[in-house]
Length: 384
Image (tube, rainbow, N blue to C red; front, side, top):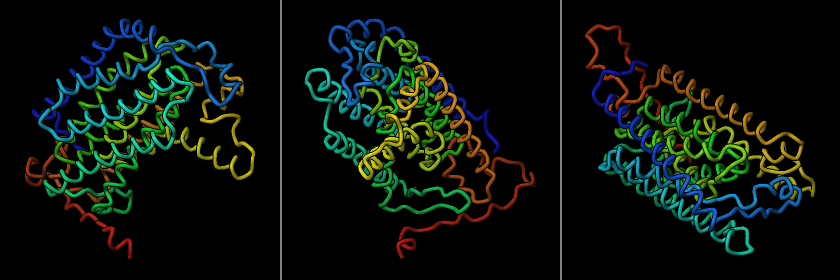
C-alpha cells in the first residue's frame, strides 16, 4: 500500500489534523477547571440506578459534576470548524450530527438531575436518535447521488455490495447502534473515554488509508479534533473522576464514531475496532433477553463492566484491562485494513482518496499488475 507522504494534499491534511488535535486539547484543558466549578454547582451526579448494590458501589460518585460532554463536544466542534474544510459537506454533517445528539443527551441528563425520573424513556431517546441518524444518512445519500459515487458496502474476501437506497437505514442503524453502545459503556471512571479515544484514532486512520470517497482526508481531521478533546477530558475523568461526560457526551461521541465509519465505508470493520463497545452492548442484550425468557441472569450485572465490579475487581483494574482490550481491537482493525489493501479486488483510483497512488504517477513499467475487476453485488440480485 504505497503512501504519497510527499504529496501536498496529504501534508496539508496531516498538518491540519495535528493542529486540530492540539487546539481541542489545549482549549479543553483551559476551560475544564471553570467548567467543573460551574457544573458542580448545578449538575452533580445523581446515583440512582435499578440496582441497590450498584448504588452502594458508586455512592462516592454522588455529586460529581456531570454533563462534561458539553465541554468535549464544544471543543471538538471549535477545532473541527477551525481546522477542517468547512466547504466539505461531510465535515459539516459530522459537526451537525454531533451537536444534535449532544442536545438529546443534554435533555436526558437534565431530566435525571431535575426530576425523579432516570432520564428520557428508552423509546423517546431511541426515536430522537433515529430521526437524527436518518437525517444524516439521507443527506449523505443525496450527496452520493449528486456526485455519482453511489455507496457500496465492503465485504471481505467477497467484493462489495451495492447498497442503493438501503444505504439510508443501514447507515442510520450504524450511527444509532454506535451511539447507544458507547452510552452503555460509560459507567466507570475513564472507561468510555479511553476506549473511545483508541477507536476514534483507529477508525480515522483507517478512513485515511483506505481513502473511501474524495473527502476521506477530512476524517482524520475530525478524528484528531475529537481525540484531543477526549484526551483533555480523561485528564479529569481518571479515577477518582472530577468530571463525568454524561449522556451529553456519550451519545454524540458514539454517533460520531459510527458516522466516521459510514463515511469511510468501513461499517463492518467498526465491529472490530469498537469491539469493547460491541461486547458491552451484547452483554445487555443477552442479559435482558435471557432474564425475560427464563427469569435468571447470565451476568451479575450488565453492562459487562458492572459484572466484574460485582465480582470484586477494583475499578482501576477493570478500566485498565478494558483499555488494553480496546487497544488490541484498534490494532486488529488496522491490521485487517492493511491486509485488505493487498486483496486483489481494488477500488477505482477516484474512490481511493488522498492517500492512494494513481497508476499515472508511477514510472512506466514499474511492475504494476493489472488489478482484478471489483465484484459488485446489487441489492436487487440479493433480494431475488
